Length: 373
Ligand SMILES: [Zn+2]
View 1: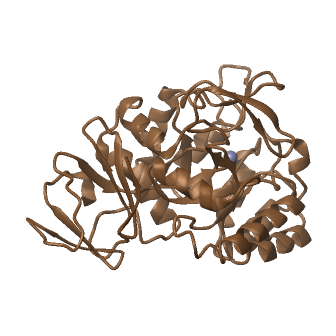
View 2: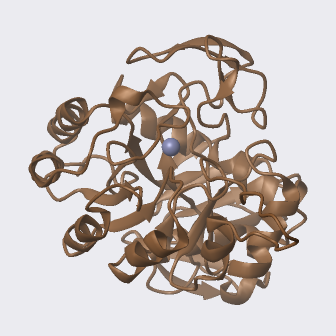
């Protein structure tokens, strides 16, 4: 319930919307969740792939089915490819899904490349200098469905492009950057409101002579209240001490757990081949990341699924269920302006039902069961 408290009651969903809580409701269709936890569905705003699916290969219908099996009632397919390829992929997904209308879980697109200073685990051909023609080309290909756009504040023209993209009702996210604090603040002043997987692809503070303690860009972002910070919550991408520091600075109202999942997430430990020339990856378990076999086993996204991320908030980082639900559902939903992420009258009937061991029993989207264990 709002505020993170747990109550025992019946929950009614009518026409896809949460319509009431009663000691007992009689309904057309009933699910007995006695002894189970009923929580808002998980909202994953940063995911590149899951199971055998990825944004660049395969279709969003299979992607959404796998997400349902892992507790996500909303997700944002995220692209990391050269601009022309991203445009082609967005057009294909729009065509195949009747402008996303066939897949209520898909709440928009996200572009992680191309406006990045460095590619991190990605390929350098996926990045490019900021160019208004490229921006317009991508906006057109997205057909109004782009919701988040990553950008490095140290690229020439970044602040102007952040202002322009933000004016299209798209959230700009500070990403993959060695920017100075002044450059990052200029991006925030221009409208940037999110930070892409804080700590990962950011630099440690440089050494300073003479006993002066250096300040890092991440320190600024932790105390800049205008931005929400993403965390990849697998304990591998970010040390648990830094995750705790993020919770203390940002609180759960400005911390979002994302999976940044890649193809192979949710599959058995093995070697898989990524599309688009990324090569072979190794997966050892949900918390070990997706490792690039040909590039020193470097990390290329995580092997987390949404439900792993939620469970980690509790079991790995010691948070209570309300806090875990905030960072996995309520805060990302609010950021995107979705009518989701809380169990409250009038909100979308997107819920998950978990057993006592936090095992996923049901995923329900708009009142319809989309996964049953
Ligand atoms: Zn990513």
